[in-house]
Amino acid sequence: MKDEKKQTILIVDDSRTNIMALADLLKDVWAIKIATNGKDALRIAFSEDQPDLILLDVMMPDMDGYEVCKRLKAAPETKHIPIVFVTAMNQAKDEEYGLSLGAIDYITKPISPPIVKARVNNHLELKRYRDLLKENSMVDGLTGVANRRRFDEAIELEWRRALRYEHSLSLLMVDIDYFKRYNDTYGHLEGDECLRKVAITLKQTLKRPLDMLARWGGEEFACLLPDTDAESAFKVAEQLRKAIVGLQLPHESSPISEYVTVSIGVATVLPNAEMHREDLFKQSDEALYKAKENGRNQIFMG
Ligand code: GH3
Ligand code: MG
Image (cartoon, rainbow, N blue to C red; front, side, top):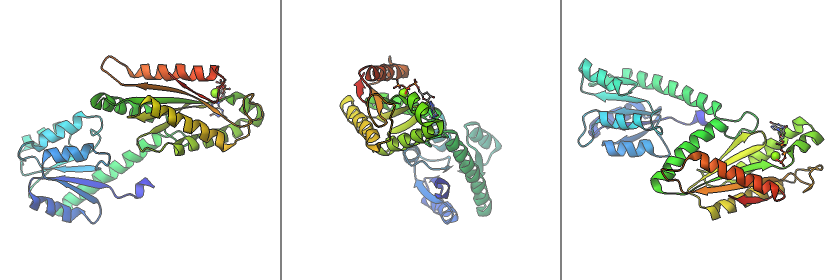
């Protein structure tokens, strides 16, 4: 369970003495990461393993804490991470400025250890609660895989990454063949069970951590493959198709197989500034239509 995982605090300060004082105070309860300059702080905050809270010094050489805060709040990937300034700048106008940049709290040095610990605890409890709510609102209730909202978020992020690093991005649309007949033959509850098994199998068949499977709606699933060219996307699609056939879920009213099968439309793009995300959906949707038209239980490359 995610909520048993220790939350992580990133301490950013150019003085090792200050870092050690805070780390000693907090390390029994939370996992600690440290950065001694703004650049390292940004790198850690933007990494896959993001901190749950950042304690941020203001005065640092090169890039000060205000600038770090501005950059974190400006980026969709990091703007949700709560930031607490811990600083010797104790004027009301400094605090006002820090909070105006989006920091959740402002603590002045010299610190009172129990107060810092209590405040950190409050912020992290709220953070845990927000994470949980968010997680629940991002999961499809029937199948337990990501829902469309979660998928939209992922594609937004991956689209920008693909633009920035000039990576190709592939999208697979996976649709169960003759699923209406499946429901008609076995009943809606069995249909639900079938959807669950298909979803879990598709998800387990994807190997790379950034690949994402979501329930797109009804009996259709979308699968996003970051940094994946057309040839590799085809291979993944073929693995998914085979995995579903391999489940050997009986489908006696299917005209094409004794088992449940899926058709998959594949689209691959190298995003550029003129292109829109909708193009990728349109392309994979049309490919799926072709896969159906060509006889189902197969892949079509758009
Ligand atoms: P095709 O091979 O062309 O995809 O045919 P199909 O029958 O799979 O497609 P169609 O769009 O005609 O029918 C989809 C069916 O999926 C109809 C709908 O009742 C069923 N369905 C959609 N969502 C659910 C669900 O959550 N549970 C169940 N049991 N069935 C669902
Ligand atoms: Mg279908």
